[in-house]
Amino acid sequence: MRRGTSESDAEQRATWLISQMSESFSDSLVTGWEGLDGSFGLPDLNDEHLLTAAVVGGAGAIVTLNAKDLPLPLIPEGIEVLSPIEFATSTTELDPFAALRAVEVIAQRTGTQGPSLNVDQLLDLLVSNYGSDSAVETIRNVRT
Image 1 (cartoon, rainbow, N blue to C red):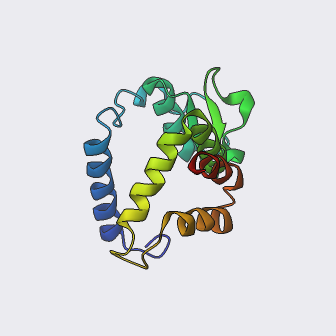
Image 2: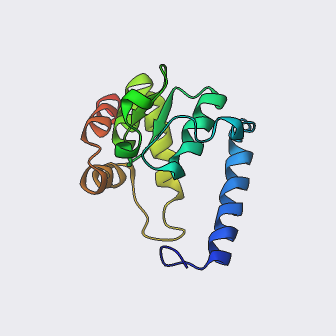
Image 3: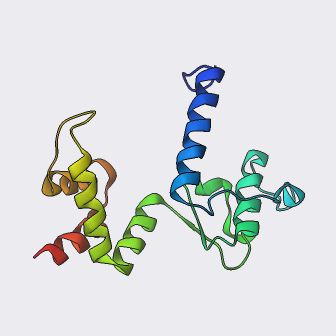
């Protein structure tokens, strides 16, 4: 058991997540990264596959809360290391109307496994629970 879940449960959840990602993003599966694995000298060898997949997949960014294990001098040019908040802010600023539509869709889906939330309540949660102040401000500005 790791992180409170059995190996079998973790494998089932991973399989489900991979199938969902593959359905939603046809180019989400990166193959052929194995040859570069271990070649970047990252502090945590368990993060090497992430960077090699980003290189092979042509990613412009790696979104992580674990930036300490991805030191910028070891990251190839053209790949940014962003926190989820930085990514959300950047993405929202690129197309605030698309961000608003996404929040509206999420709000419509709430209530199936928890409380029903309207757009304003969801935006408030993004600020209070995740510190998404800047992204939320951008979205609120396009609502008015």
